[in-house]
Image 1 (cartoon, one colour):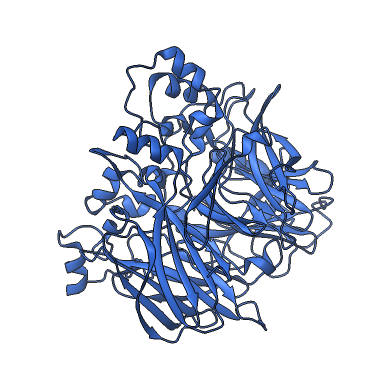
Image 2 (cartoon, rainbow, N blue to C red):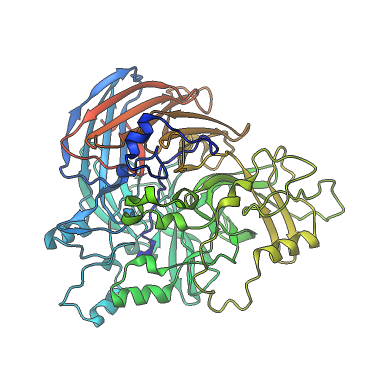
Amino acid sequence: MAAGVFKSLIRDFFAVKYDEQLNDPQAERLDGNGGHYPNCSSDVWLRSCEREIVDPIEGHHSGHIPRWISGSLLRNGPGSWNVGDVTFGHLFDCSALLHRFAIKNGRVTYQNRFVDTETLRKNRSAQRIVVTEFGTAAVPDPCHSIFDRFAAIFRPDSGSDNSMISIYPFGDQYYTFTETPFMHRINPCTLATEARICTTDFVGVVNHTSHPHVLPSGTVYNLGTTMTRSGPAYTVLCFPHGRQMFEDAHVVATLPCRWKLHPGYMHTFGLTDHYFVIVEQPLSVSLTEYIKAQLHGQNLSACLKWFEDRTTLFHLIDRTSGKLVQTYESEAFFYLHIINCFEQDGHVVVDICCYRNPEMINCMYLEAIANMQTNPNYATLFRGRPLRFVLPLGTVPRASSGKRGLVKSFSLAGISSPPISRTMKHSVSQFADITYMPTNGKPENSGEESPSRDSKRGRYEQENPMNLVTLEGSQAEAFQGSAGIRLRPEMLCDLGCETPRIYYERYMGKKYRYFYAISSDVDAENPGTLIKVDVWKKTCLTWCEDNVYPSEPIFVPSPDPKSEDDGVILASMVVGGLNDRYVGLIVLCAKTMTELGRCDFHTNGPVPKCLHGWFAPNAI
């Protein structure tokens, strides 16, 4: 299932206003070609690290970096597009590069280093791409027959171990992740790669997500895919805190995939006090296409299929028994990241960064990025919004037993009428300009004809027009039909948000108020913006600077925090245009999103933009 090499980020481009276009000399200078997105420098994603910075370098400090911040901001992401004279085809294929900002006593140093993967070593030794990635097929080896390629399908170590997505702690150790079953232990102070772990050696999974959940106790959960006698299944893995977390790993829950030949693509999952939350989108990995790709030397993106006429499913699994409690459904949408999940007053709340379809993945091909300015549809393909789904628990109320009627709110596609009885200030009608990806076939052995979105919506509304969501202040909806409970979300923020982060150590799986994100709107007044969203008031604060592109914002709490946002935001940053040897660290007040201080570095070569990371306290 190396097709899981389908990595996590979304481009960090932000929209402040949609009805205005920035028209000033700086914007013209950044584009230079009179393109469709004059404020957006796509070159920040096209850079390759030519020389590692193994020894930490000093930078230029300005402002005030609080002295209580002590540790290392570790970052992971694409490091190089090139192997010899051969170029990768997709951003998610680039060789993994680590970044470290070491912070102590108000001072910062920077260094970077490639993850020493077997894939990197094989490619460098051959001076060509010899391991197939998501969007890049390996250069054929004339010594390998079709029988060799067939045998490789059943070898877990035959796929890529290019762990360039994220970084998570297991006890006092730190590991880089991808969506194949490989992870690498790294030294948080030197960035040296110390060991490679294959999850398949400990639990029988063929892949796992790149976003596990780390509990305050130190126990780690992740979601993988396994092959059973009855077909593929999702498995929740537990790595108990201790000295042998991998040796003691075990499966705590198993859920059959809805389609035997098309397990869903999983980049993350959710967790609350009592439930695992598995959101099964209709983007699948075709097992038949995967075998064909392996035999014919094709890249792995050919294995993905999007079923636009099928729903997205929300599965709640009891954390104690491992049994499925209930399944809900919504209109089809694509997502990479769940912001947070929590339980409140008989409901499970699931906040997700949603897209109408997975077309944005195609926007990450090298050719698409390079030609972004000539593509008038690029911004539309990237359009997404943070949405809240509310899942009612327990007995479904009868239609006549309550006073809350179903409000005919906007659907995800923005195809229904505006509400009459109340106004949704954060209506999902912004999705009206986002079109569906053409369906790549029908699900095999589904046993039923896929109804249209209109017919399914009408079926639910006619059978029971009672809104089952009774959560105070919520504008999300759920209603009962013969096929189950149908969900409609509410919008949390009318800005594109990606790589969301919260005060994770205290509020993961709990009721929370704030999340922080980078923007995902390309047609923006300032594409590089950091966003703070208040999910209670549905308001936003932002920070931005001309031609600056920050990374995923990581919240670090104050030593004795008095509130959820009592702390700082740490984000690395690069700039667009010709200055590709600049990298910096910005420190913001999390309450006000105003700058406290920064450190600027000028390096010995280009510094690419990164994806995900982790703050390692006291790793100095």
